[in-house]
Picture 1 (cartoon, rainbow, N blue to C red):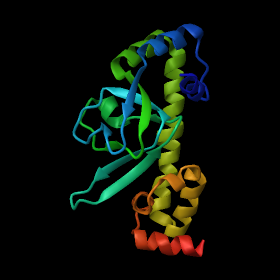
Picture 2 (tube, rainbow, N blue to C red):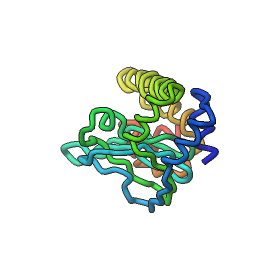
Picture 3 (tube, helix red, strand yellow):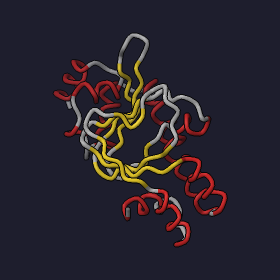
Picture 4 (tube, one colour):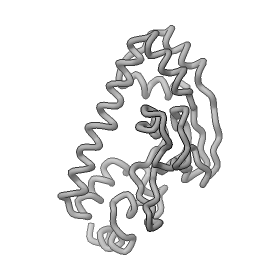
Length: 189
């Protein structure tokens, strides 16, 4: 649980009272490899913090291709954020790539605490701005203008600590290229 609060307090410091109430919301959940934290089409009800393990956040295209948007490893907050905000079915699957442990907390209860503790709302805003606005903007530009080799170099910078835990096709899916292209890029880098 301490890692959870360390992650949050990278964005904003919480009062002891706020920490205690959030701790009361946290539930531990074990998820086996290839099990889903959330399936596309489900309406999400909670956020999660990855204590141990690795997840892919992906959608399946109409032709059956897997399109990985992001990977989440230890000390990451994970959710289908837009579906939570809009209370709509998720477009994305969140699947464990390894046996994993997460701390979950209910969205509605969490939102009530944001009204009670403004510092929690400040954390939430700072987290969303950094992780779902700033990082997303760079990714969108990268996918439109950078070569596959440049995208792979950026991937290695962001995900170096987990690259060895991923399969070739997972990395290729994230980069928007084929596994064969990725093999060639790896040889040249």
